[in-house]
Image (cartoon, rainbow, N blue to C red):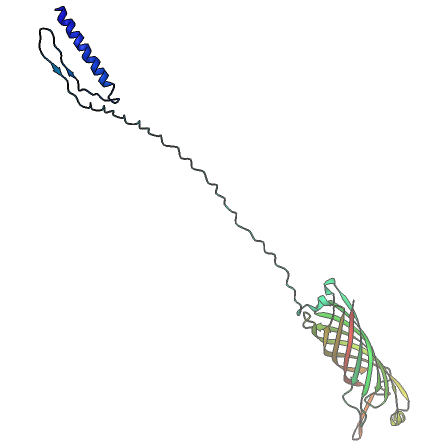
Length: 294
């Protein structure tokens, strides 16, 4: 019994050794078997044949990769700064309107400062409207005036003049009139101003009688004094603030007030058998002059 077992063990060992040697010639990971195992166990006849091909490769199952679920990232919303623009406020400053063609005359003559005084000189002519017979009135003169422009529309004027020439009767005459007038300016806002004149005056005259008049009157000279009134229209052109030119026409009526009105009337006229006398006269004066304001 022991011999049988020992023989079987030796035979199995040799077989395993051969298989191991053959397995060394096989590639790694495979099993080559082509050996024939003949075993004989004493007392038992038989053989074991092992035929094998290429052993199948082992199948490795790759484990699925882990699935990582990423937590949602927080979303940060950047707050936007909202700028509210204040409405723009515009301040409109209106400049005073300046007028060059309609500048008020009283601004030119300084009435913005109050009362303004003007001094003027003028040349003048006087007419009685004709003459007795062939005589023609030809009297002219010069004068000075002062105007007080105390209001844009009003002024007070003082004048003093002197006339020389032949009068209505053809006699040589020298006369000095003085007047006080109120001037009313109708458009003081313009440089060319229209004004009206209304005033009173007195006058002194010296007459030199010639020829027949001297014989009739029984004297060579006479002196007259008059009181009267006048009215007229004029133009004043304001050239600068302190200088202007003016012209006007003034109609007057007057009467004598001296002591010889009864004994030596100024005007006589024969109407048939009747002789008419008067000491009242009327006429027109014209003036052109310049005024300086200060």
